[in-house]
Length: 124
Image 1 (cartoon, rainbow, N blue to C red):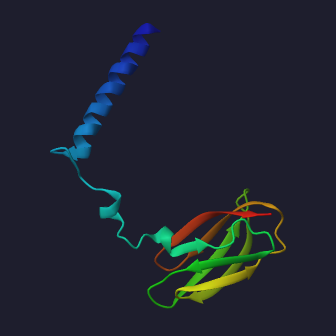
Image 2: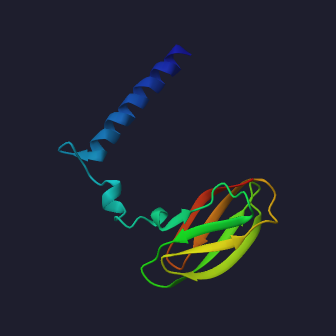
Image 3: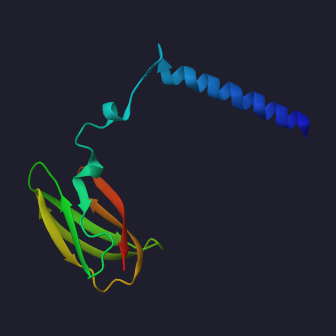
């Protein structure tokens, strides 16, 4: 048992020392989140204005450079799609009637041809 634990510690230490060598060159990171994702980060395009939803009206703002068509879907904790809508938007607020949804935690997904954003949604 002690030999196995010692082997694990040595292997773990060796792995992370090699990982450190791969991650940096001359103490500079190879890539940062800013390099990979420009300032126009996908998640910043979607803002849920009413979260939690208390009156059955979901209000969102989806920012797009041009008029874009997107699909909005709401999925429950079991992975079942419970709401779906298709809209066109460009820097505007949109409202959806979700009053038929039961109280709980859901996942809101907004998808276009290029991107998909998922955020947690609470219905009270």
